[in-house]
Length: 219
Image (cartoon, rainbow, N blue to C red; front, side, top):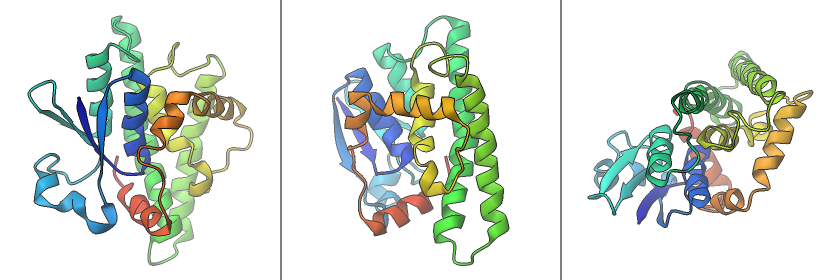
């Protein structure tokens, strides 16, 4: 059994989607970001960085994993799902996973914060992050012009980027002309396991959206 500590953010949904896709049993513990539960000693004992998501694998000596990309890799290796074993194919999946971790997540998180919640409206900052997100989206779109998913079969790389890119409207990112990207989004969103994962936990009200967006500044 996996204990999942999460909240309704793209990084949180990455893990719940993966767990649903892999068929791994888990118990969801929703972390109340607005109450700063992620900064309390009990949670810091699980993730010293004070961020969601994190997991505790009760079937593996209560092994703890934090950082969403690391969790996806751990779960894929545990289940034997959504990560190829052939070395080159595995490397390609990891490369696209890191593309999301190092690019889309941080850039789109900053776009959200500056667009919606920064105390001072700075158009130049908003445009800088939105433009960088658009550039990264174009990279994905070009990749997806040649294949259904990012690396041959559906993988944790697709889950990681999907969880963020699906929020393009909220981030104010123009997707005009990115037809391959939009096709890919629709294909993934139609998967039953993805729909279940997006409800664990479900999006909350306005205050939860504000707190969640502020938390997305990091990976």
